[in-house]
Length: 164
Image (tube, rainbow, N blue to C red):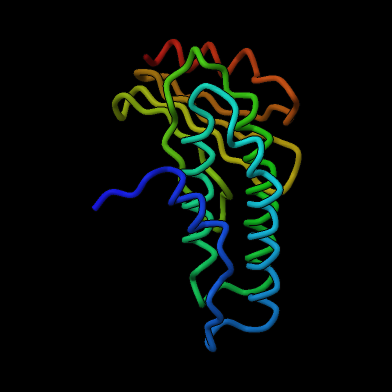
């Protein structure tokens, strides 16, 4: 049975069930994550497809934080990446394709636009104020950094449009 977007948001913002295998520090970090979701719940109601992108982001980070083997430091690192990813998601223009989102302990939150393995653009967002990116277009490979700001970088827009 498919759930509605509103049901999924309610599930994500509901209190966590305490697990005896998650440390007290881990539970505190996970509860802080729930607070972040509630803080960003209002912005979810606006934007072209940002509601679905942010919900996907919440779900992936929430699932990642549910890993009982994560240390408190790793949880904090992912939460910081999550906060920056929300800021980045707010800058996404409506003129680009919807990205795939993933979470990785080493790279943070990753926004990925892939058409083929030779036409791909990825942005990894960590705890710093930088957006690390890599682009593959045919035989060309490019990578670099952009500052996280309140505007979607023009170079990202050009890469994504070139791929699609």
